[in-house]
Image (cartoon, rainbow, N blue to C red; front, side, top):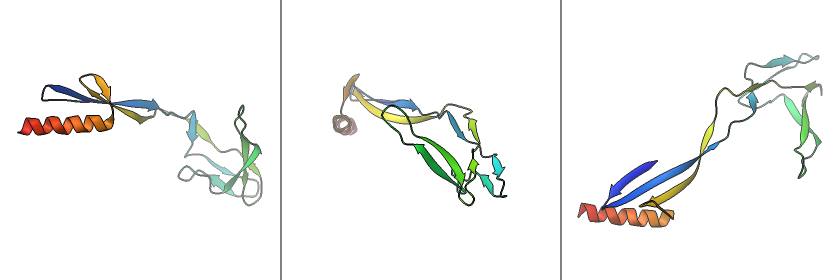
Length: 121
């Protein structure tokens, strides 16, 4: 939150915070060697040695189901995942207020610049 008082007006910005914590994430320590000797592991959040096979596509009621297979030999591989260790957040919408009344970004910027001009005169 940012608050400025200029020319007897209170200018305030607030930003929504959205939790985006995933249920699980790739386990960077996971490695698996299939029966044909092919090594599989996560690399930068991707599985370059595996291909994702869709077993049933997503519908309005259910998410897609899928599995992974080795690109070279076709063996089914279950990649390693781990629980997240902390909550993750992203910035959401910004709200603009003048004297505790929500206004548009354009109105906020116009009023703010006008108030700054008056103050510096």
